Length: 412
Ligand code: HAM
Image (cartoon, rainbow, N blue to C red):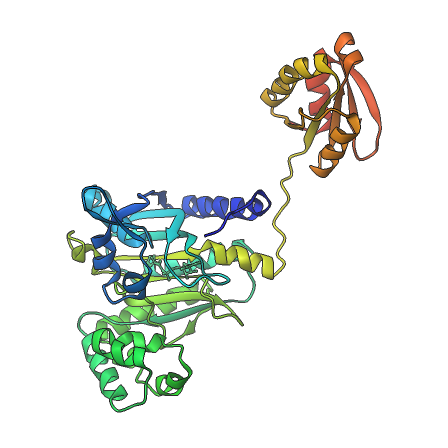
């Protein structure tokens, strides 16, 4: 787990702001769910055999012995909230977005943390319409474009439905029979065969390459659904690459699954897909759903790696310099009147010397310094110094707010 320091916040503020903007632009409403949930929600939702549930949950026992888990994802909690609050009675589909921290006990490395942040968008209820799959992929793509991430690649697959997937599963297991796959794959073939396509071991590479493709085994309905997703994506000009080995690590998906990576890196910036069976699995009335989540830590890392400049905050600011006890006392009130008038004003009231305070003003990138000393305090005036040119003028305190606003171009 890491700290996000003040110097990192500019990027994070942008990530938050663009999440909000896209949410509003596409008609999604914000949802927040608790940091802890009953462990059973994730065990059932993400699947007992998923890596997250098998190895990565931060679980704890409460005083009343109930088993709780720090949320490792948002999708199951969002579905729980939909069921619990009777959201099926609202106009369908319900479109929500979220942003927050998640917890997975993974091997920490660059881009993989035990506390990390996601934003995500989900469309719940209504029809299992492929247009929503395409819209979700488009929103994810737009977010990354908005953050100016280069060389994006959308990897796309369909993993079928309850009808066609068992047939494919059998084909896959038959194909792997007698092949020298790794131990993990052998185990997966028994409990969750599709996951063998996710294997990163060298010894399995070649076997994987020759494996039958799910797309060839899709039933007529799934094939039609997938074809429309592709057509809609073509329509909105979101480029994609079909990846027959993309299965995703969580068990709730059916039909469309996707991940977004940047070329030359196998670190997924985000992923998602359709999950039409999860609602019923978690005790609700059957309802289709589709969504995605993006890894904000990885996006922040990419912004840094690709040298993408995030805009400097444009608001200009003043720095208040005070010398002597009287000026210090009166200064507090003056700072307040500036802040109330919408001026960004910083200060280092604890520092004594003029030089020390001006040096801090410089480091903080202030545009002007307001110098208030003993004499100014008596004369009810203040010095405004332009820190770029060094030019300065003295104004009466009653005119200070207007003069500062003019100098900093506030409300012009
Ligand atoms: P996920 O693929 O587990 O999907 O996570 C989505 C993204 O979160 C990943 O692509 C990655 O960028 C980021 N991520 C995951 N684990 C970590 C980690 N340990 N450190 C840093 N970043 C990480 C889900 O969570 C699904 N709930 C997505 C979804 C929403 N599907 C449908 N709706």
